[in-house]
Length: 512
Image (cartoon, rainbow, N blue to C red; front, side, top):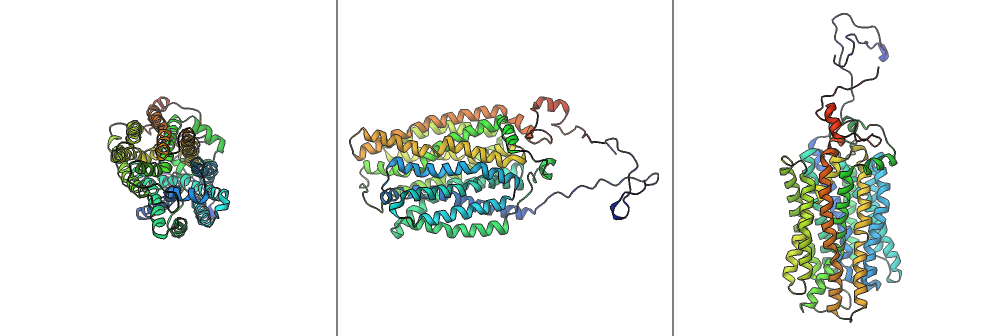
C-alpha cells in the first residue's frame, strides 16, 4: 500500500483482538473508516424550505413596528429620536447575544438553540401587545428580548445550510434563503399596516405573529436535521468534526482572515443604510405625500399610511429580483472571474449611492421619481445578501462558522443598524428644534438626516474592493485540511502551492 505500510497486516481475532499476521500473498483489507454523514437530497431541500420560512418570520418581526410607527408614537407619546431608539434597543440586544449563540452553535445542538430563540422572540412579541401606554419602558424592553431571540436564528441558520449544501448548490439555496430578508421586511410593513386598517388596532399585528411562529417551531423540530460541521464538504476535518478550538483562538483566526474582515465592514455599511431606510422610509414618504398635498396630516391614531404598504411591496419586489440577480451573476462570472463575489458587491453598493441621493433630493419635487430611485437603490442593495453569506462560508473553516456569523452580525449591528435609526431620528430632531414647527420643516429635517447614508454606502463599496484582494488566498486556506485552523500558523497560499497542497497531490503523513 502507498505510504510505506507493510505488506503484512494484523488479523482481528475473537472479540476484535489482533491475531497473527496473514500468510504470504494475502492482501491487507482497507482500513475501516467511519461512514460519512449523508442525507437524501429531498430531505435537505425540505429542511432548507423550513429554514426559509422561519427566516421570513424573523425579518417580519424586525420591521413590523416600522409599519405602525406613527401609531406607536401616538400611543406611547415618544418623539422621533426615542422612536428610533426602539430599533436601536432591538438591534443592541441582538448584537450582545449573537456571540453567545455563535459560541453555542459551534459546540452544541444548533436545532435546540434555534428552537429556544423562536420561543423567546415569539413570547416577547405577544406580551408586548398587552403593554399599557403608561409603561413605555416595558415596550422598549420587550423589543430587546425579541432581538435576543432573533440573534439565535440569524447566527446559526446559515451555518446549517452551509453544512447541507456546497458550491453552486449552496449559492442557489443561500439566494433563496436571503430572498426572505427583503420579503420578510416588506411583509412586516404590509402586515402591520393592513391589520391596523382592518381592526383599527395596531396591537393585533403583534398577536398574529405567534401563531405563525408556533407552526415554524413544530416544522423545525420535525423536519430540520442538525448535520455535523462541514458535512457537505470534502474537507475531512470538517466532516469528522476535527479538534475543538477555544473561542479566543477562533477570534484570532478570524481577525487574520482579511477577506472576512473587509467583507464584514462592507456588510456593516449595508446594515447602516438598510437599518435607517427600513425604519424611517415609510414615515419619510408619508410626510412627502403631505407636503405635496396628497394626504392630510395625522394627529390621532390610527394613522392611515399607504406608504407602508407601497414601500413594503416595493421592498418585496426589489428584494426578490435583486437576490436572484446577485446570485445568478456570481454563478455565471465566478467561472471566469475568481473574485466575482466581492466585485459584484462593490459595484452594486457604489451604484446604490447616487440612486439613494437622487431619491432623497427629488422627493420634494416629484414623489414618483423618488420612488423610482428608491426602488432601484433597494434592488442594488438586495443583490448582495446571498453573496456576502457565500463569501463568509467560502473563506472560513466549517468548525468556526457560527462564531464568524456571530462576529459579523455583532460588528455589523454595532456600527450599522443598531445606531443608524436612532442617529437619523436624533439628527432630524436637532434640525427641527432650530426651525419653525411646520410639516415642510419636519419633512426637510428628516430628508437631510438621511443624506449621511449615501456616503456610508459608498464606503461599503470600497470595503468589498479590498475584500477582492484577499479572497482567493483565504478560500484556499479554508478548503485545505490542516490550514486556516484557528490555531494555525499563517501559511501563505504560495507556500501551499509549492507544497502541492492546493492541487491535492501532497502525501499524507502518518505517525508510526
